[in-house]
Image 1 (cartoon, one colour):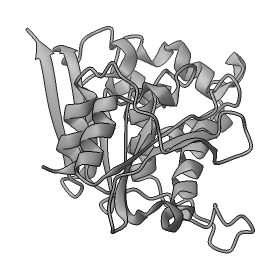
Image 2: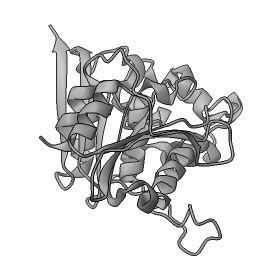
Image 3: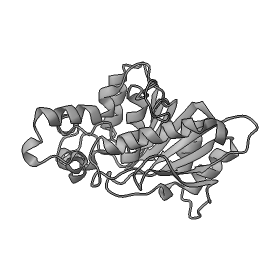
Image 4: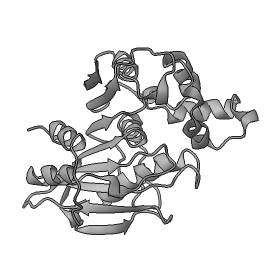
Amino acid sequence: MSMSSLILIALLQAAPERIEPDVKDEKYGPHERNVLDLWKAKSDEPTPLVVFIHGGGFLVGYKEYVKADLIRRCRENGISVAAINYRYSSQAPFPAPFHDSARAIQYLRSKAKEWNLDPTRFGATGGSAGGGMSLWLAFHDDLADPAGPDPVLRQSTRLQAVVAVAAQASYDPRWIRDHIGGKAHQHDAIAKLYGLPPEESDSEKAHRLYEEAAPIHHLTKDDPPVYLTYEGPDPGLRAEGRRGHDRVLRRLLRAAAKEEVTISALSRYNS
C-alpha cells in the first residue's frame, strides 16, 4: 500500500485513543510553540517520515490533533510520524507559522541519523491550514541556507510527497475573490494571518505577502506529487465560496501544474 493511501485512510477514520510518542515536546525553535512529537517505526534501515501539521485557521490547534490511526498504520508499514506545533498568527503573523513548519522539517532532518530517519523521504499531511502549509512546503523553493551559521537552517525544507485534507491552494484574498467567489476572501482567518491594518490590505506590501503565502503561486513542474481530498456538499462554484475549501482549488492546482506535477484528488460529496 502506498504512503499516500495509508495517510488518507488514517485521516478519514476516527481514532479515539492516544499513542504516546517516543520523543515528546522536542524543541525545534525558540518559541514555546516550537515543539514536536515523534513516533518511530521499528526498522534496521532509516525510515521515511510523515510530518503532521495541524489545522485551525492559524489561530487554534495542537499537534495532539494527529490521529492514532495515522500513527499506527504508518508505523506498521515502516514509516515514522512526527506532529508539530507552530506559532499562531495571533502570536506572530505571516510568514511565522509557515517558517516554523519549514524549520520543523529542517530540525527533523538534522536529527535524521540520531532518530533513524531517511532525510530523502519526507512527506507532510494535515487538514485545512495544515494542509495549506503542507502544499506551501511542497511547492516553495528550498529555504535552506547552506552557508548559514545555524546548522538546522542548513537543512532542506523540500518534501517528497503531500496528502492534504480540505487544503487551501491560496491565501491571497484577491485570488480567492476571483476564483472562489462569494465572501470567502473576507474570512477573518485570512486577515488575521497577515496582521495588517485595514488601510494596508491593498498595499504593495500586502500584495507581496499575499503572493508569498499562496501555495499555488510557487507551483512548478519540479514539485513533488500531492494528493488532495475534499468532503461535503458538492459546491461547484457556489456563490458563497464558504471557507475556501472548494474543490475548485484542486482543479486550479491541476491547471496550474499543466500536468507536469502529479496532483491526485478524492472528492466525497453528499448528494
